[in-house]
Image (cartoon, rainbow, N blue to C red; front, side, top):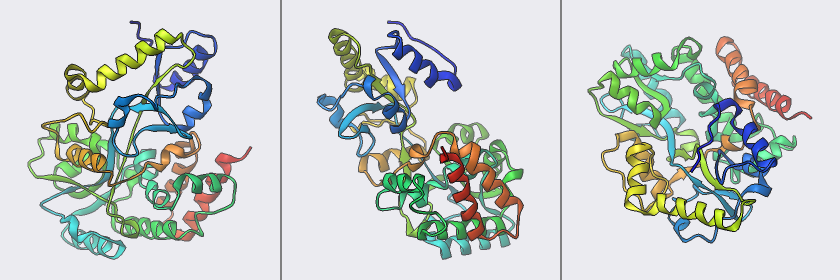
Length: 347
């Protein structure tokens, strides 16, 4: 077995080159449907493999009606909260969210903290109004085509209200780094941060001595956390039949044998995306993600369907301007996001 390595920024480009010149790997990684579409002629249809039936609801990488990617594991994000300061049952909609952060502010505690990095500032939190659409992927396609706008869509209008409240009540996220955000939360100075299960190791390093939970962001009364897949195993359809068979056999072993399942949980440190894999001793945030994933009670990662590079290159600058300009209205913010989207999708 040969493992081919490359730097993260160059990965997809190098993969395309190798696949096109016939030196591509038998098994390779794909992040999302957009990448699968660009490599459609190279992805093998795994729909008929029995072990894929164990993939958690809605977590398989699909291309039309074909299953082309097996998730490495799942991740989830929402409101990571301090159980000593917040009762998630008290935060169910816009009004209760605002009253909660106002009460915390009156006690000298930051209610909710965002941070300056593109995904933590806007990329993840913007997921909610997209995912609450009847068909998020179709909505994104319509947005790309200029057939709909964020400023005229109800879920985005309330999303802008949330961000106006956060801007009015909380520390400016442009002054907060990821490390500072998590550190202030660990110190009890912040009641909630919008983050995911990836913060758990840092919280452990900080020696957090209070119980931590993961709650939904309550846009339009949303009661589900956002769960998705960072990367997927795909099989090269252009290999010889025996090599394709060996690749599938390896993936089946990884996801069904006791040793393979142990490696996924203990060596890789993944939250399993397969309902037949048990994971013991997870931190509370990861446990919440696992339970939501296995039950199917989740909202999707719509940002996986955004145009490539739009979050850091176009949406983050618009969000930065909003947090700098205290007199900018939520409506103006949405108009700026629409303009940023148009810029990203302009031919």
